[in-house]
Image (cartoon, rainbow, N blue to C red; front, side, top):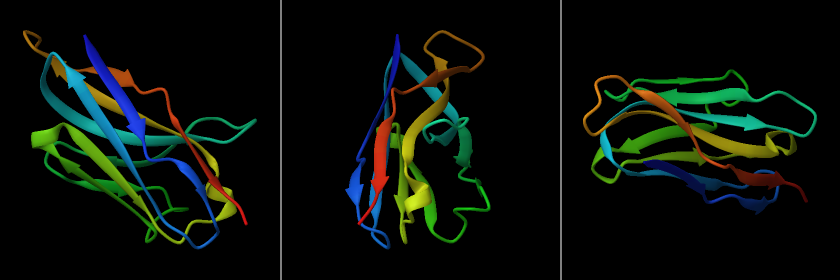
Length: 121
C-alpha cells in the first residue's frame, strides 16, 4: 500500500507564509510527478503547482512568484513554500503523487486527505 499525507496547514495573516509538506510512504519504488491542488468552499479543485521527477516545475498564474514547490527524493517528500499569502489562497490543499509501487511498472495516482490553509486577519 502507498500513503500520502499532507501537513503544515493552519491560520495565517495576509502577507504571511506557510510551508506545506507532502510525504509519501509505503511500498514505493519511485515517485514521478507530484502536484499540489487546492479547493475552496463551493469551488472545484484546481492545480496550483506541479514538480516532475527531474525537478521541473510549473505554477498557476495566481501563485507564480509567491509559491515555490520543491522535492527531497531521499525522503519521498514534496514541499510547498507559500509566501505573501492572500485571503483568496484560503482552501484545502491536496497533494497528488504519481507513484510506481514496488514490483510495478507504471505509476498510479495517490491523493492525500488535504490540509486546511486559512488566510485571515
